[in-house]
Image: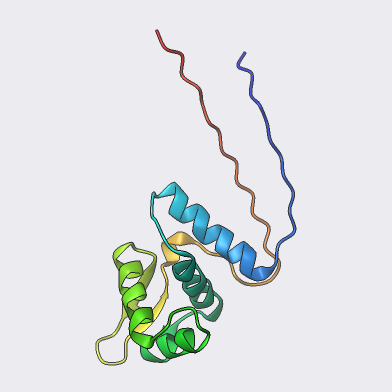
Length: 123
């Protein structure tokens, strides 16, 4: 019978913190590197849902997450290449968090992750 060291933690988080945690967990499990500004931007997008690209970039720069609308647009383009967001449309593009990530943003959120690290025996 294998011995397993179990760690159980219970933490109460704010809505923003739990959204960011979900994004960070997805990025960690998929080996995707993002900056704090990228994380803050993705959190805002997750909370707002589907957004028109130009107005969202303006909002993000006004919130001082990025210094300019162009910086926000560049970050969103990188996020799209990493499959963190999806863009739709050709003239007035809309953006949203990729549904495959399954980020929960509504109501009370309870995350239940179960992870196991298996130690292999060397011969």
